[in-house]
Length: 176
Length: 416
Ligand code: FES
Ligand SMILES: [Fe+2]
Image 1 (tube, rainbow over the protein chains, first blue to last red):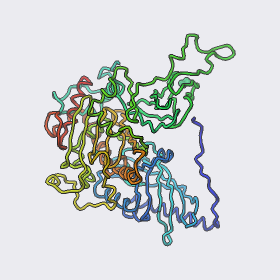
Image 2: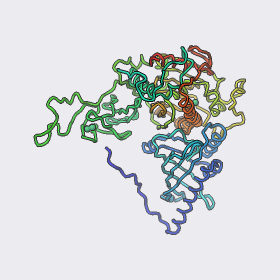
Image 3: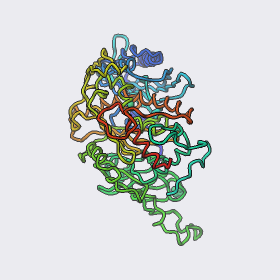
């Protein structure tokens, strides 16, 4: 009952010229890193701009994800809910001041659908430092995303932030 | 049951004198003292008390199991027959290894990884490798009886699809332990209809477990701290409400959702924001269901709180983790006959609660700050006199009556 199991997903090699794939992967990686930078800067308004109107944005524990249970720690079912979260954080939440940092790695393109939707993933590690403390790792996990093209950039149509944490330390104030 | 005398542990208070008779002054050492904490575990968690373990829908088939915790002790909830369950200590009877390492799963029986003692789903010891030795040598003594070395199985009670357990043979029945008001709250939330598991949120908060217990006996803070609640009318001082103290540390605290409004009381609620609107109205607009706008719920002391907020139904499970830490597990559920809209609302309203909840964020941040204060000044006292010094039921919210009533019980139970 405790044998190691593989979590690798079956992936088909992408039917795309190598140079094009490399360029796409690099653009998506930049997009992820810029996204993280806005959150680290506390620029929540800029964070909102990363989503389509009909987006799905959810922070979900690996436990729920694995069991197929839908409850999120944060669950925005559309962009208005993303906007509302920013309103709540700005106007109503009582929280200790903190600095956070996103460390994003392992960005890769998994597949491209016929309509051009891009399935991608990346790892995140987030450190948090309270006003009177030292940085601590508060969350590590994986983004599982669907991006759509928007001009020469992208937008998230779907973003699940799957946190490996069994338990969250105190709280998640700034979205992942 | 033997209880360690207070003062026998290092780091203990020099004196455990209650600041003054009664229950309106609380000595801060109750929130950080290791000796007090140890005794609380013995009295409240391993004593004559009942604890929430899990929902039957979490273990849907024979052999399905889920790990859980009572106090600091790991236990296993397992379905061993069609409608029969066991709660077993997650501790091998041989040398005490934790037996079950996965959070959830399905097995035919339990085998300890260490020396592979094997137990039935009811905890009976079935197999001991090399019981008779090898090559005619070794083995267990002839007088070793497997029947005496099973996993310890706890007394359990199934109430509407939730399994409760106690370590004690002397505890009253679950019904008597609850009393009529609390039993009514439990049955209100789990009327016996088939339930659907929606998921968990788990959180570690760096404060004593009683700070969380008291936080949900304290409607006063909710009318001030939580501007999200106040502004959108989900919990306000000027809503119809009730605080009902109970025996044994239990309590009932309920209010009514009345939506956004301005009244005389709003001027006192500094965090009320008339200008604030949310774009997704569903987030703050619960649909009418069985509770008829009545929100809040009850503590089934010490470790479970059941209640409804907006359209979220959940079991809140409180786990002490040392004097300065507690863990919260919220198990969200719905009913299998919920329609798509109600299911969506349950998921949406979960945004109010948990580690990133619009409301709960304030609480977890606040409780960690509270611990800094009370932990560093153990010799000081806090005061709970809002709404008077008595412990009678109130029909208003700005009251600390439930905390007073808890400390009356606490002092008696702890011999303080
Ligand atoms: S400790 Fe479990 S078999 Fe030895
Ligand atoms: Fe609160």
